[in-house]
Amino acid sequence: MTLSAAYARELLATLPAQVADPLTAAEFAGLEGRFGFVFNPDHRALLSAGLPVGGRWPDWRDGDPDQLAERLAAPIDGVLFDVQENGFWLPGWGERPSRTAFALSVARRALEQTPRLVPVYGHRYTPALPEADLPVFSVMQSDVIVYGDTLPAYLHHEFDLPAGGRPFAATTPKHIPFWSDLT
Image 1: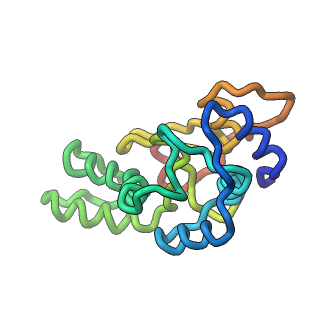
Image 2: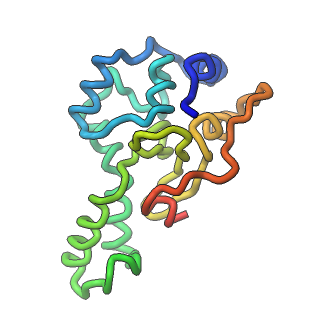
C-alpha cells in the first residue's frame, strides 16, 4: 500500500529536519528525465508532501546536478570498487576473469541490469521501482544492510520517530534483485 499523503505529512512533521515545499510534478519529471530513474511511489509520496533539506538529505530542488549524479552512481561505483580492490565477485556473474579490467567489465554489465537505487538520506537508498512498500538499504560499497522494510519503517528507525500506533513495517522486506542478495 502506497504511503498516504496524510501519513507522509505526519512523518515529515516529526523529522528532525527542515522541510521545504513539496516537489512539483514538473520537478519530478525534470529529475527523472535528467537522471534516468523514476521515484518509487512511497518516495514520491514523501517528497510530494514536503522536501527534507540540509545535512545529509539529497537536495532534489537546488542541489548541484553533478553531486546528485554522484550520489545516484555511488551504490554501483562502490560495488565496482570492491570488485577492483577487494576481490568481490558473485557466483552468478560466472567465473571471475583473471584480469581486473575484464572483471570490472563483466561486473559493470551485470550491475546495469540491477534496480537503480535512489538516495533518501546519507548512504540510505530505496529502489527506483514502480511499486510501494520497498525496503531502504544502507549501502557502503558491497556492504548492504536493510535499514527499513519500508520507507516509513526506515524513517522511524533512522530518526527514532514515535510509531503513533501505525503499522509501518512489513513482516519481511521485499526482495530486490541483487541488492537484497548482498544483505
